[in-house]
Length: 101
Image (cartoon, rainbow, N blue to C red; front, side, top):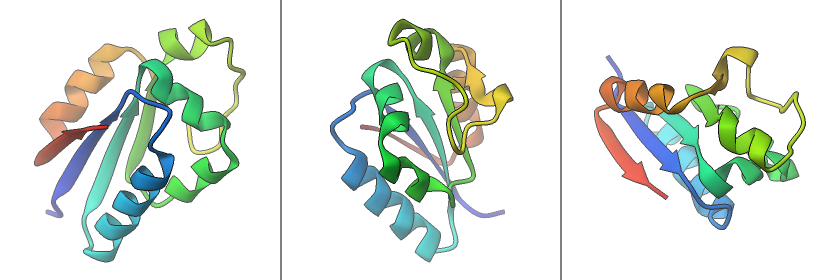
């Protein structure tokens, strides 16, 4: 089984770092699971967000998404991945390592 890195993103200031991290993870053959919360959901509005397409899964907090009055659909986010913080907890269980950005 490939190692999986869980990434919690709660800020809208680190997209370049997130893209670089995901690229490095992909180069090593590992996978990344991302959960966007708080201001992190705003990253979905940046055209560069689609650069995360090689991540294993990207989910977001739907409560925060709606609070910022953002509109669906968002590239890379399936309907099932507009989720609650319970998805964040599941992500922690599903990953070998976990970081917060």
